Amino acid sequence: MKTYKEFHMGLIGCGHMGMAIARGAVRKEYLERYQIAVYDPDLAVQKVCQREGFKVLENEQELARQSHIVLLAVTPQVVDKALENLKGAQIDCLLSIVTGVSMSYLQDKLGDIPIIRAMPNTPLQINEGATALCKNEKCKADEYDFVFQLFNSMGVTKTIPEDKMDNIVAVSGSIPAYVYYYIQCIMNDAVARGIDDRAARELIVQTFIGSAKLLQQNVNTPIDQFINEVCSKGGTTIEAITELKNRNLEEIVHSANQKCIDRAKEIGR
Image 1 (spheres, rainbow, N blue to C red):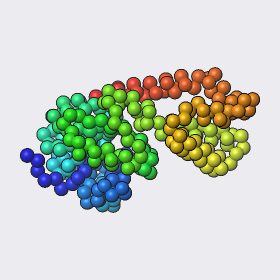
Image 2: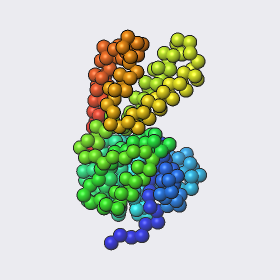
Image 3: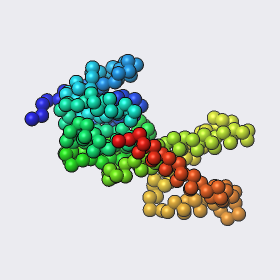
């Protein structure tokens, strides 16, 4: 029989992503601050959480005992320690955002409990995130719907099969860093050509925003069509695209994605 839980969501680990989810839940009025609890051994993190109005608890067991949804938001390197400390706890629903850690692994450590696995990304903190979700058979529809709608309020959310979750890291999870790095490369080249760095950054970032919005608002239009609209025959852009193709950018991206996925499997369980 389930006991009364004081907090609707409790976070184990409250780094950048955990804090983004907690703040987003409050910002979107899914939860009040007093409905969120946190356990994190870092004193600096504890102080930030207290300033946010979240209840800071002493250990993982206390958090699980008092929270309906337990959000596991630690790094893969310390997940085993967190799971060991959770053993025997009554967990109504475990929501894990730990990269590479399967639901079967979590069940092996914690028993046959309801589990939701999520792969969000950092733009979630400004309501522009992309999140993939899956659940096990023990998870109730209302629990999954709450989590789905929470993430969906902070961007786009899709349900996918769990066996594709490691691949999703190279579709949305790690992609913000790809974008930032590409922008950085363009900026560095622009500055080297004598363009003011602030002006270059604003122009490049706005170009990425505008280009992405065009794709978002025209979902049925092939991406090739947008490329061709910019690449007029005999013009400048087609020369650049031809060079990227000659350098086999698609193969470079594939190789980078494979490294990313392989690492997710390597550090995962």
